Amino acid sequence: MANPDFDSKAFRQALGKFPTGVTVITSLDEQDSPVGVTASSFNSVSMDPPLVLWSIDKSARSESAFSNATHFAVNVLCEAQVETSNRFASRGEDKFSGIDYETNEQGVPMLAGCAARFECKTWAVYDGGDHNIIVGEILEFEQSSDLKPLVFSEGSYAVTGAHPGLD
Ligand SMILES: Cc1cc2nc3c(=O)[nH]c(=O)nc-3n(C[C@H](O)[C@H](O)[C@H](O)COP(=O)(O)O)c2cc1C
Image (cartoon, rainbow, N blue to C red; front, side, top):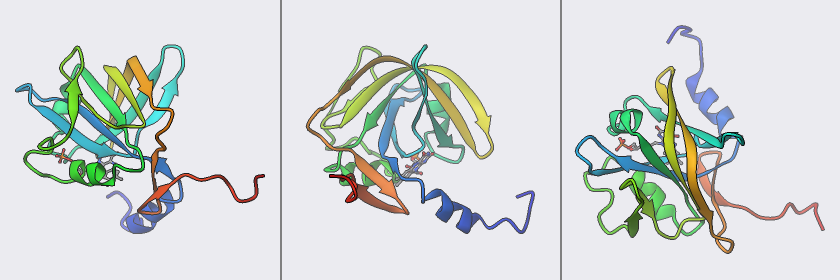
């Protein structure tokens, strides 16, 4: 760390004041085995062309799989998928065991029961300090009108709800 006085714990806490959704990003590794990680760094980038981004920790087991993948999918979890989030946030050997999924045209795993799913072609991979920033071009997407998204806020899972100040 360049600045020894930098308080990384406080930095994390401050970042937690910005609630996010929770995704599982999936792809195939160099041996064509499915890989997946829980990620809250997902965000939109561009409408034309349609681009999204997320970032992968360079120390993650699946970092090289994602940094070299030609395609990946963003599975936006719904409020009933806390267990799925925890599963893909672990370093377990077989994260897909017992998980309901199908594969898309490129063989990328697409998880069942998600609030939304985006199928992406890798557009660019940028260096981002201890993470790589992965930008994807949207090839296909779908959403479920009746499933509400899972939220991650201040280090805990949460759900969305109308603001009490609104009618
Ligand atoms: C809510 C939540 C959000 C996360 N967001 C990210 C993220 O955006 N990028 C990342 O690299 N890891 C993120 N993680 C941590 C990874 O899911 C975790 O390190 C995982 O074990 C990586 O898997 P792997 O080592 O098998 O590749 C997040 C974890 C949780 C619980």
